Image 1 (cartoon, rainbow, N blue to C red):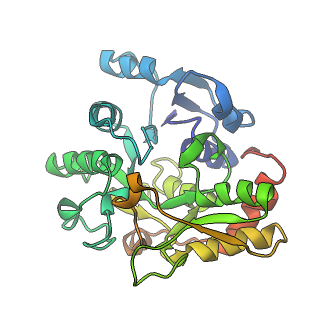
Image 2 (spheres, one colour):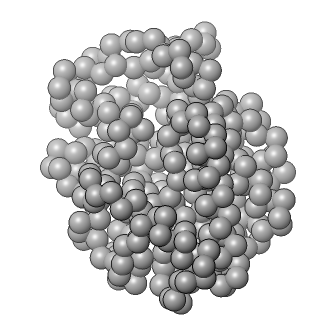
Length: 328
């Protein structure tokens, strides 16, 4: 049995989809029991059970999980980069993660959890997943800090040989539409262009970056979850690998690169309207990110990553234009 927390969410449902493609359906999804748009993400997926996240935590704490579990993919979290309630973030992103990690240790299950590239802050200490550099990272927002806190708990408790933490960069793709303002730029761009024929992008406030030339490591969700299940203890080629790894394309692309690909997929000429960065995120805004994926490659991950233009074409034509979600 495999358990995926955040199982109806973006990356969690995509992991279920990837496992289903391998013929694996012995899966329990854990998420909020609130219905809504997230349920569309799992409508075509195959799994054994769906458990509310609060009920699942109580089961973990009481030792009431009566399944033979080989792995927990812990993708569930408050993922809002603008969330300012630190108590809420610690409860959801740190303490919940600790509870599941301790359960995995006691029950000989592999723990694969979502960290975040938000831990790297403005990149002043680089984007290397080298363990020696992680304590010096300076996240720019409280969400990133909560992810850093759990990474540090893993390191300080000498659990790197037991757990696998994944620092996801700018993931985009099908099954993200429920995320509201936390949707990817690609998803938002599609909606704006369809409605107005143009796209709003932030002006740069740094002279070394021209408008639209801020850089991000964009990674298609299909590639991100392929990298994730590489670590699966049952079927993954990297089943014996543990530690903290970057999950990204290893390439930095500009906002204009991504925008141009969306316009192209829609068969439209690029039209950009430049707007100012809102004051509430000015100090938290990343101008550059690029995953160093050498460690992932060294662990044996050999698959090619889809080029940005090709992945955006697949997303726009295969999902956004058709209203489809990931399914079999």
